[in-house]
Every structure is written in structure tokens, then in C-alpha cells.
Image (cartoon, rainbow, N blue to C red; front, side, top):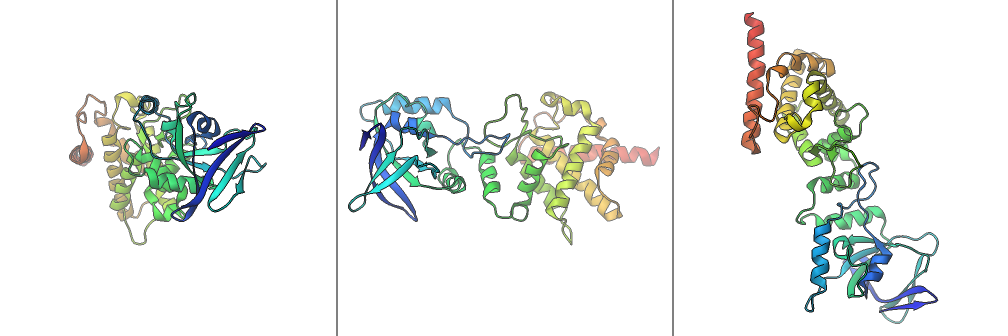
Length: 346
């Protein structure tokens, strides 16, 4: 239950454990919980936060539902963020009872670990709702809990889950080199992909994101599988090779690269197909004992890339799925083979 003491908020709770983590269980009005909590949305420009953007329709649907006479909901999942200036404190009582006392100047002290869409449009409703609140989880621990709860959630971006995994990994370059390289492409100065991968969070206004993080890392994984060597390249070396390749693509096909809307270079099929071609060129350079850098990629691409119609109305139009990727790879390889045949035969 909730009371106000000298303008402080007093909430009576039960203290216990959810598996191995301490939690509070209680009830409070929706408008109060809305006032005291916030959703930690991932800001792609800074890398802060971890949740998907707010879904207006989802939240409005829940508002309409919860106002119905027979409605109910599972407990909202919150976290009392660690406080530095006494914004909140727990007062122990008998048994499992505990009182949560919140300062009148505390502001939003609870993170909405799993309830942002349920609370999002309830700021004016006094409906009583159950809640479970973790006590003092760090942002990293919150992300871990959120990831477990939502990893199979409908509509949750797989790229956002991948971004979570990157933040939680101890040695990302070793554990998930394809994800490490994709994020490097998205963050490196001079990369044609800098800031253009969709991480599943809130993008900076005006940012033109054209490929998802999940798609890029899957294409890079294909490249890594096709270029395995003994000894294997380090993740940093592989990341430089992939960066060199995409810089070469943008240099050889500048007009097509600039007009992403009407060309396939940055569409799914184009990204997958080009990463296969990158693997072909890399393997050929390695077998010949030549370095495979930006210059090598530019030389190889210059021989054939401009003979392909990369437009969305060209031969690559309509290719989709694994079969489409395979067909696109063969189409590009054939264009490259024909360019070599012309050189050999004059």
C-alpha cells in the first residue's frame, strides 16, 4: 500500500527473493509508478541504455485494456537504481514486511525493466497495479535481466539483443568476432557504414540507417567461414580487411553507394553477395602471397563491379532468402569471370 508522509512517498512491500536476487513485492497506483520510473532506451549515438524505442500503439492498446472491468496484469518489473543522495531508503519491519520511503525530490528512481509499454500511457490513471522491484541492480545487471526476459519477445529487435550481447560479453572479439567486426564498421571513423547500422534503439535525428546489425554480422560470419586459415587472422586483422573492402566498394561505385535507396549495394542480398566476393578476393590474394588491403580490393572490384546493374530494377531485383543470396553471388561471380576472360583474350 502507498501513503504520503511529509510529502515523501511511503510504499509498504514484502521483501523476498526472485530466484537468487532480492526484490520487493507491492502494489501502487499506475500514475505514481509512472511518475517514479523511466525506460532506459538505447541511444545509438552514445551507446547508453538498452531498451527498444517506445511503441505508441502497444502502450495505447494496454491502456484501453487495463481500464476494462475484468482486466488484470502480471506484476510490473522495476529496479530501484542505486542512490547517491538518499533518494530512497528501506525501513525494515517484522518478518518480510518492509517500507520503501522515497524522498519528495527523488524524481524518477526506478528503471522500467519490463513494463515500459504497460506504464507508458498510464500517467493519469489511479488504477492499482502489482509490481516486483529489484533492489539496486546496476545498469549492466538490469540489461542482463531484460535480455533474459525479452530474448524471445515478439517484436523485439534481434539487433538490439545482439547489441546487449556485445555489451555483456567479457571478450567480444573472441566470443563473437562477427559481431565485434560489425560494431567496428559502425563506429570507425572513415567507415562507409559509420553510424548506419540499425542497432534496434533510438537513432539520432537525421541518421540514415540502412542495414540492421544482425544482417551485417551474419554477412561477416559468412566471410569469416569462407576465409578461415591456419593460422587464423586475429579479429582486429579481420576487421581491417572488412573495413578495407567496404571502403573499396564505396570508392569504385560512388554513385551507387550514395544513392542507397535505388541500389542494391546496401540491401540484404547485396550485402551478403558482396561479402562472399570479398572472401573470394581475400583467398586469391592469400594464395598468391599478396597483401589484401584497400588497394587490392579496389583493383579487383574495378575490373567488373561497374558492369553489373546494381539498381533495384536490375537483375538483382526480387532476389531473396538463402536461394536469392546464392543466385546473387553466382551472378556477381559470373560478371567477374567474364571480365577476366575479356582481359585474357583481348
